[in-house]
Image (cartoon, rainbow, N blue to C red; front, top):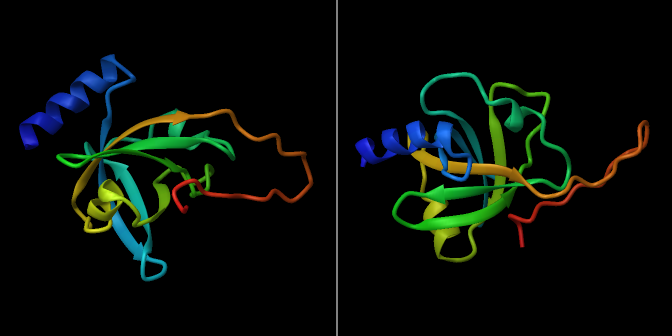
Amino acid sequence: MVTMQRELLTMAILDPMLPRVYEVRQVHRDTADTFSLDLAPADGGEMPAEYTQHAPGQFNMLYVFGAGEVPISISGDPANRSSLIHTIRAVGAVRRVMSTLNAGDQIGIRGPFGTPWPVAAGRPAERGASGIS
């Protein structure tokens, strides 16, 4: 499986529709069925610019190797250039498998996708997360 993940990482640089491999740095259990994943590039490199410049309303496709892929809103601060955070509710087969991930496990990411919501300067923004449904 490690060889497959390395091949995906190499191919993802050439094809943005292939998932990039990320490592779970930390899992935070928010509620009994909701958790947040703190992710960083598995190769130890810098966070790609598209992941540090996301806007409200955008999401990533998270791919659990051997289980499948699901769309999850980005819930972290785009100004935080060291990690990518997603908050997820463990509903459905892929999300339930995702809820068993631990620090050090790997996951694939594609995105960000979606049209950002307009946010007026100087006004508070309301945020939602499609991963929690």
